[in-house]
Image 1 (cartoon, one colour):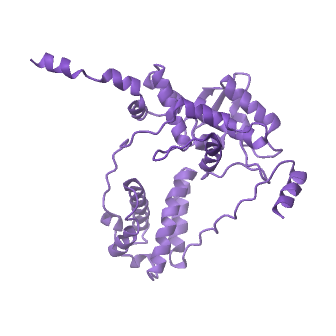
Image 2: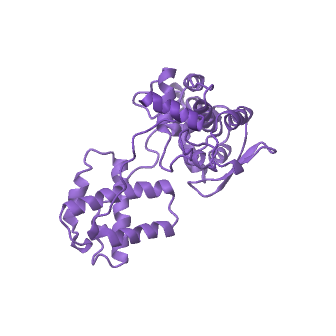
Image 3: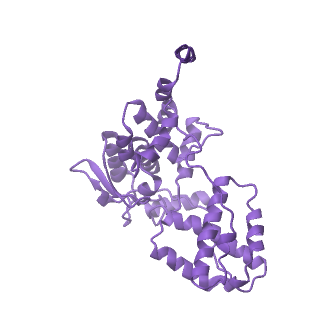
Amino acid sequence: MRSVQVLWDYTAYGTMVVHRRPPHPPFVCPAPFAVEYEAFQAMCRARAYTPMGTTTLLNVLHRFLLFLDDQGLAHADEMRAEHLTRFMESFSGCSTRYIATVISTLRNYLTFLYTEGFLPVNLSLQLPKVRVQRHAFIPSSWTAENVTKLLAAIDRHNPQGKRDYAILLMVIRLGLRVSDIRALTLNNLDWSRKCLSIIMTKTKRPLELPLLDDVGWALIDYLQHGRPATTAEQVFVRHRAPYDGFAHHDNLERMLQRHMHPAGITMAGQKHGLHSLRSTLARTLLETGATLPVIAGVLGHQSVQTTSHYLAIDLDGLRQCALDPDQVLADGR
């Protein structure tokens, strides 16, 4: 029956439609906390939190509110410090970075409840401070061989392959963030000037990058021969009806994994999401002698201090900084 359904969809829509599992049911806030939850959501919208930031925050908050409901609380003002302690104990096996995210979310929410009069005391002051050292980890990057194997493994004879190839080139060659690729619209492409101009989702700052020849031709191939007929504004859309853009929480991880396996690429113990391909571009630029301000401009960083994190993966540059122990000892005599 599934094969018949696929053929029927192809006849109806002109492309293969992949039917995925139904999404998780939407969150229903427990009644005792519904008023303040709605007020908090309104505050998030008023502060123009990014979609991804809001999703991360609400995912933690949903778990917290369900926990409070399980504890039998009838009102938010019944919350005590021991409830926070019990909730945090459920994250004992998580990374320090994620625990810091949970605590930050709780601090944000509890401060809001106190400020708006939902709590008589500021319970956020009871939360521990977790120090997470910025750039404590060396960025993951790909070898040139694996990048070549990844692109070569994509079947560019089918519409979805054309789309995925163009997406990956935009990360590998231009260093675009996933959020900006998801949001990219046809109006962002200036074919006469061979460039793309966007307002970055993360920083809300403008960014203009050249449409390199291979990227441009991959886009043209997708737009002319791969993209389904759709009213969606986004350049890249799902290849199943109704052919809308990717959801704001989709990190395109599954798309990347789909092509890594046939390419024979394994990166065990190493991060290998699309962001690692951004890191690979930064390393490549460093190896070619590009300066940090230039790389910061390409990657859309607000400060070269952020870009300097990638110095840790410039092995050739680090070798030049190495000291000769014999020379050091000789100079110290």
